[in-house]
Length: 142
Ligand SMILES: [Zn+2]
Ligand SMILES: [Zn+2]
Ligand SMILES: [Zn+2]
Ligand SMILES: [Zn+2]
Image (tube, rainbow, N blue to C red; front, side):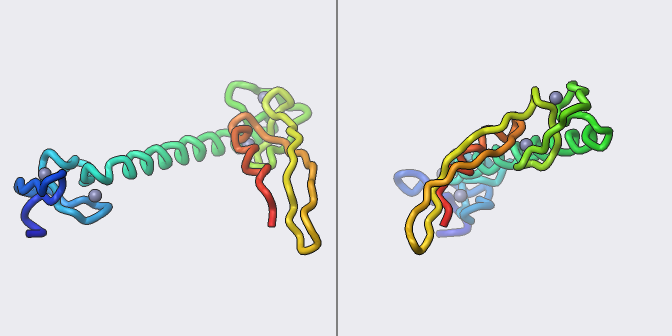
């Protein structure tokens, strides 16, 4: 059965398979998958999530490249900013920004040690793009 007909659907579909899913390896017909993407219907959400992640990564890469270039000219890493004084280092992406484009956040986390849990306070400077990642720093440390 496998290899020549589609096995997806509530009842086994039985339509001729037109492609094989690149994620799960299942053969699927025209109804139960996207043959241009080579992804079956079941795996499509995974595929789209992965694509979204790739897109974000690419955007982030471009942003850093621009920031590094601006930094190499002594300028704030924010596009169209041009400020060149009081630059501060973003402690996540390691590029420099002017006070308008970087913020120092206070955060708390718990440090788990053999002799107990310590509550810690710390500060971190993050640029606009990195600010949403502040909660990564609020996680407990072991
Ligand atoms: Zn699949
Ligand atoms: Zn089918
Ligand atoms: Zn940053
Ligand atoms: Zn700036």
